[in-house]
Length: 537
Image (cartoon, rainbow, N blue to C red):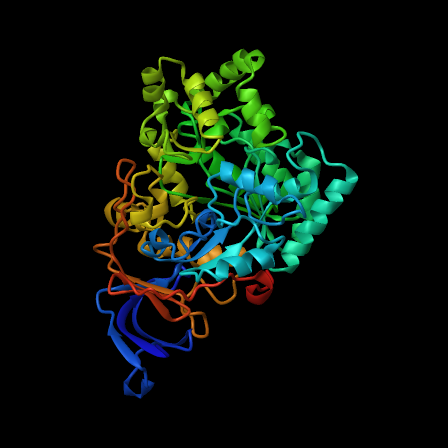
């Protein structure tokens, strides 16, 4: 449709200001007018929006939908939450850059983290090549890519557990500059995962200085979210203070029994950093469980050299006692074997274990939890996902209530029918609607205006988006209309593959992706590049 008039909506514009009743006219993919619009509008179509909230399309500032965009370009689980823009390439994981001849090594690494690449594998070297491959599928949402530090490191020096040489660090900087020039929105690190975990402060500060020169964001899955949480936050602050880069702490949490009740202290620490001149913020998903690769249980030294080397070490008799000892300690720090649930396995051989805990699997196999993890990883060539029940609900609520914390799902776009049969974290289906339904309407942790600001205007400002995140004349018509009385998440840990309810209409660039609660089949999304969409801070 060329023009659309949305009549009588409760407009919450993303700025945090109070809601107001208004009509909104959409023309040529942009918001043309807001207010009381009479008969002189000449709209091709008029839709009654009475009883609905109209807001900017939600921005998922921490997404891993690049894991699934090739098989699932519509990103159904996200659009049914009201998401119109996904920030990808988080936790150090991105599909670019790729060194010539290094395609296989990056493919193996990404497979370890559950990326679904095209059947023919990686056929690109840089952001532009990846963006072209993704857009050929026809995107249902917009994508704003980050460049992953792990991909930079693999392109420059593989999976080596050491500091880079001057030449290697120079190559990482050049590859980072190239990605930023091509439109990457920043760089992410995953300092809990090899090879990112092998990087020390000097390397990270060097790359962060390049980001600061481009006024781009540094996002970080910090080095430790459990017993070393405070030291990991100190490291992130040091990177910001030394380089001048803007720092975003990814999926802020206090993980493990020893950190229960720590949310207030970590929020105060980040606020103090801002008071000291460090531009630092955070994002969060509203669940008390995390999810990642099961290989995160394995000590980092065992990952050096890549997947093949990891699998060799897991099967080496002379390393068994050392590995199981360190892995049992890691399991205990994450709430024990009963608090770790398998979400997916690479092969059909162990797919029946999806939804079962490590404690249950170990009991069935007659072994320890660490031995069960080793066996699973070996049989599945390292490709096993897991959910870790390791946070306190009170801490989740406290972090969510902080006005400087944005919303990021840490999940990916899924088709419920195609993904059925495997456990997964419900955040991929319900992050945004869970906040609107459970934490706003039912628990009243946030006002509706504050919640929407966290999902729209705040992340848009953080990224540097000039024409999204607010309902404003001239802005892109990425808009969501939802029923505030019915919006809710439906998926849970037992039955996660259930789309959210209450999203009535969803527009991307003025095109209806959801209309009257149903997918239209339209795919107007594209890969957004910072040079096209950014403004100076």
